[in-house]
Image (cartoon, rainbow, N blue to C red; front, top):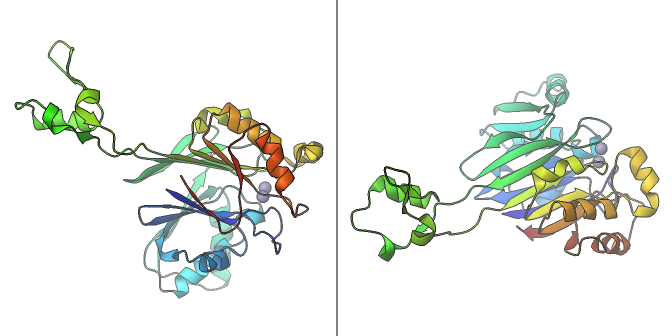
Length: 301
Ligand SMILES: [Zn+2]
Ligand SMILES: [Zn+2]
């Protein structure tokens, strides 16, 4: 899994930072997460193939998270896209995009599906052979959702010399899936830990877009390999953060600590910050393994 930041700024585009957009790359698919204005240009700049985007996840309907969507859809159409595209996002997004296409008399050559997210607790919204995506509510001025991307575990490797000669195919499949094989009265006949090894452990990436400090998300994002959490302000502007339903760098770090994640990436920075070293220091004081989201940077998960 690889994360590429396309935009780490908030509110308005600036010469320093684009508004929110990210690519999560896995197994030849690019999952686009938020699509602020200018995302198309960022995709070109960082050589990300748009035909590999099959699913888009929009957190909420503030413009800095989706104003790039209609342009991207139009470009996909001009490129003669035939593959269907699915957009997950809050209720109303389908109406907005549909009306833009209607008055431009744009007939799409591909199927465009919308999935309206309207959950009040964590809910699995997508699944394919590689990963699951769970949406969960954040605490913002309008409905806003975070997304948890959970890679699926690959089957375990058999340790051939430990397998008995008379083991059946069904029993082998159970071991490969990480289950013990039991006898008729429920005792462990073959222990999967003794007969298999794990290839790679499945990774988790949690995207927490605009939100005030919100401990309700902790259970859902627990133990994530990377947590992206907005940190629009520093702690000296905590009143402004509370008023606008955003977080400070310190608050993002506190969530990372309580959720026991491995790494924190902070982003969605206010355009008032040019140098972000103090924002980073503030977060690191609470959660050491913190990095800044920087446009164009990749992060291995
Ligand atoms: Zn925003
Ligand atoms: Zn917002």
